[in-house]
Each structure stands twice: as C-alpha cells, then as structure tokens.
Length: 467
Image 1 (cartoon, one colour):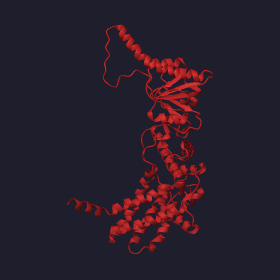
Image 2: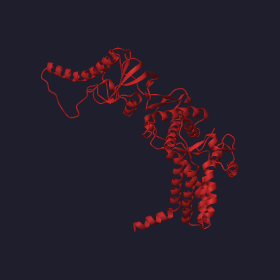
Image 3: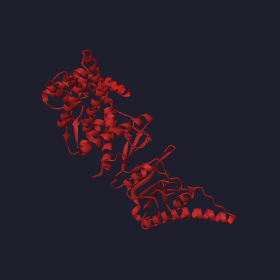
Image 4: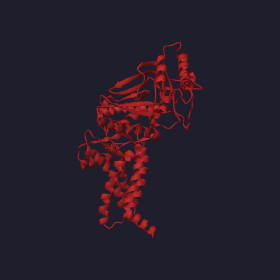
C-alpha cells in the first residue's frame, strides 16, 4: 500500500455534498499537530539552556522562508491528465481505506471530478452528489452518470421504468395551498360553495393540463417517456391525472438537486408553466425506481455529457458508509487542488526530507542563536517520514536514516516505501501530494508555533492594554 501522509481524516457534514471544511484544513490538522509537538519538545530543551522564545521564533520564520523556496524548486508542473490524477487520488485514498477499496474509489472519484469540470469555470464539487445506500459492500460503490434521488413516484399506477425519457424540472405547486395572508370566503348556499371548490380545483387542473398537452406534443409520434420532477407538492388528484396519461411524477425533490438536475439532464428548471415549451425539457436515457427495504431510490441515468453526477456509496453498515464518504471527500478535494494548482510535489515524506536537508545546510548561513530555531524546524519536519514508517510497522529511526542517506547519494526526492520500509523515488512510484496543501502547512504551522512560543508576551501585552 502506498501512502504519503499520516491518517488525516476529518469529519464533514453528515448529509449532502462534502462538508465545507476543505482538503487544506483536513491535511493540515493532524500534520501540524505533529510538527508542533516536535517543535515544542525541542523548545523545552532549548529553554533549559536559557534561550528566549523570541530567538526561536526568528529562526522559525527564517526556516519557513527557506522551506518555501525549496518547495517552489521541487514542485512538478504537469498537464493534469487522467493518469496523473489517478495517482494523486490513489495517494490520498490509500491513507484512509484498504487497498482494494481505494482502487475502486480512485476511478470513480477522478471520473466524477472530470465530469463536473467545465472550461472557464471553477470546479464546483457541490455538483457531485454523494448518495449512500446501506447495501452490499464498500467495493460496490459506483459512479452514476446522472442523478439518484432518495424517493420514488407517489402513485401506484405510474411506471417503474422509463427509457428515452423527456425530463420536466419544475418548482410549481400542483396542490391546493392556503393563501399567504389572512383571508375569508363567505357563501350563502351549497351551490356557491360548490362553485368555490370547483374554481380552486380548476386552477390546479389547468396547470396539470399544460403538462399533459406538452407531453402529447413531444411524445405523439414516438414511444418516448415523460417524467416530471417537482420541488413542490403534487396532490393525489393531479397524480392520478398524470398517471392516466403515462407521465411519471416525483414530488418534493430536494432544493439542492434542482440545479444538479438541469446540469445532468439539460433543460431548465421552470418556476411557471406560462412559457412551457419543448426547449425547457431535459433528456435521460433511462429512469427507473429501485426499492431497498422500505426505502425507494429513483435513478436518472444515461445522460449525455452530464455536468452533475452522483457517487452512490454502498456499505453493509453505517460505519463503513461514513468511512467511505470521508475518504471520497478527501479524494475529491485532492483532485480539485491538483487541477487548480497545475503542479504537485512528491509524497511519501520525500518533500519533508528534502526540506530538512536544505535547512541543515542553510542554518550555517544564519548568524547567532537563531540557527537553533532553524534546526528545530528541520527536526520537526522529519516527524512526517517517522510517523509513516512507524504506522507501517518499521523502526522510525532506522528508516529515516536510510531515506536521508539515499537522498544525499542520489540527489533525488526519496520517500518511504511502506511495503518494504526501504527508500523509494516517490515520483517514479506515482506518489504525489498537493502543492497548495504543503504550502499552507508551512505557513500555518509556523504562525501557530510562533504564537505558542510567544504566549507570555501576548498575554503580557493583553494585560497591559487593560490598564
């Protein structure tokens, strides 16, 4: 199994698309804690020697600038083709799930990002719907070139499977609704009441009839199906009328799916039936309902060039589903970062070893005791390859010595091979990390470590301002 970082899984939102905490925060979170732990442990030793924290902070800042220069030198700029993205996704996913599942997720994650990627627009990962189904195994997770809705049709006579279907996406109420303001209707006789009820009913029936007329117009000369997906409600009378004319209707679709439906199937989301035309319709090659226990799912598949897709996550229990969803979120963000950066850096701890080696040489050019801060920064970076080796069951010190020796001899970016514990050239093995993640890590850790070191001065300054 190839890994490039210690486990850095973070919780996202429970439902919907990937929690708003992006990949940078996920990667930085635990890694920065490790770097800070190593840095502060060295600080304790240095403070016993009477070294002021300000001196350490100056050394950290100088080391950060040098580390960023090394990062710029070693980054690899490539055209982000599918093969490269597969390596990036595999590197991220194999730190979180077992190899067999990671290989399955790698394919679907890369294909999903490439599907929603549009030239000239930023990548919107909210167009990748993550739908979970407690069924089968995690390795049965697959990519749906379309959308999966977590409900079915609400009429027993409606078709369960429709091929070559027109899709009408709308946000129009097809049920009687109470007025938004307080109002009253008064009648004197039963006939007046009957007229009032008929008038209210006719208002809804006119809307339903417009759908039926459009269906008859587009499907008159063919056997194509017709599906209505409405964000608002559809009452039983309207459902019955639609079912009699062979129309499949789904009501109360989630608001987040309305834009996804338009991007997946084409067409436009209609807020009124006044200008209902053929151009408003989308198309799907297959729409079918799938029942799992008491739950129903509607699959909208075989869409032409969909700009919104669904990752159908499967698993035998809630724990597996959560684990797979967390891994998918990290993989999606890793691919997005790689495409936006246009470059990568070798993983498996190779970049940290190269930075530490450069800082050891660089510290000789620093005058005074600040060079001790540079040395502390270099030692803190090496916690990454150490933890990688330790997590794989190898001796961290022995593995680190081998990697450093190989780096000095070969002058290449060498990381830890977790299968053998021996040094390997990370780029040749296809182990890549995100450039922006490493850059953010260096900035964040330096700022946080400096604030911790200077906490006494910060507290003293705060107290003096209160006087």
